[in-house]
Amino acid sequence: MDLKDGFGRRINYLRLSVTDRCDFRCLYCMAEKMTFLPRAQILSLEELYRLARIFVGQGVRKIRLTGGEPLIRPGIVELCHDIAKLSGLEELVMTTNGTQLTRLATPLAEAGVKRLNISLDSLDPIRFKTITRIGNLGHVLQGIESAQKAGFQRIKLNCVVMNGRNADEILNLVDFALSNRLDISFIEEMPLGRVGGLRQERFCSNDEVRAKIEERYSLIHSAEQSGGPARYVRIPAYPHSRIGFISPHSQNFCSSCNRLRVTVEGRLLLCLGHEKALDLKQLMRRYPESDGRVIDAIHTVLAQKPLRHEFSLSGDPQVLRFMNVSGG
Ligand code: SAM
Ligand code: SF4
Image (cartoon, rainbow, N blue to C red; front, side, top):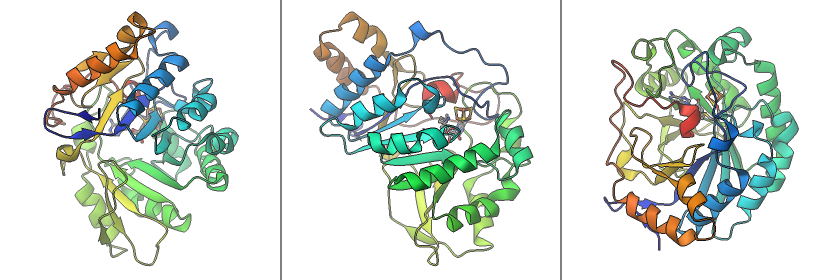
């Protein structure tokens, strides 16, 4: 039986967080000092695979592995290989910060990962380090190059734009994507977790991002969808690239929501912007031999999927869970 929520929205997309750990500390995602979860509290590789199998059996057609940084989880390539083979799954994709791609791009493509999203917020090494608090831009650029050679169907850059940080690099980032035949999506920062700094002050809406791009390029609307909330435009002279806008604040996309997230601890999140969740880890550990009990619970809880997120950038974040735990 397919998964449907109480508003009749069909769920066919699952985002699985495979680790909360990361080799970066991006300032919009994490606090400077983070405590990560002990191993016993996170899903094992076997449990991640079991969940993927259960969800694909219930009509999920696309799975995105994310985190934290998915490529620092030991055994990730083997997990991809196993999930990609699930009958009924149309696409296994991943979001990564790119640091491990010189080593892992080819094994991942061979394991069956079809597309990659790679985060890139700046092309300036010093700024890149400031935004990621640790990162080395050169490693990520090399990773992008390795991914391009590895034969993925598409590679998309993800960029969170912040006033006073990288908003003046929008055109440079677009040019980088165009000249490398990559897609690029601009994401409005979401208020998840107390990360330090004032989100409201650095908020840059995608209307502003789009206006900036239009100073140099004329954009044509594209009806294409990649199964997510991004709205796409194209530049006629660059047919290999798409420009996407993920605008949780300026353009609510919840009415077409088709997704669920599983946190690194195995909580099934019904919406990124709400805490309502089902503890799948506990259920799986209680019923190691019976997927039926887990499946019934998933169908039941779906009736409670909220209509929309209620993100607001002012005041304290309503959701204290950090993005790296949620599976961004
Ligand atoms: N570590 C990987 C990476 O950075 O691509 C995967 C996990 S990361 C949480 C997934 C995506 O979420 C990244 O593109 C990141 O830029 C985005 N992200 C993280 N925190 C965010 C926030 N508060 N608002 C909007 N996007 C955020
Ligand atoms: Fe790590 Fe990705 Fe979060 Fe940056 S956005 S700290 S790379 S999980």
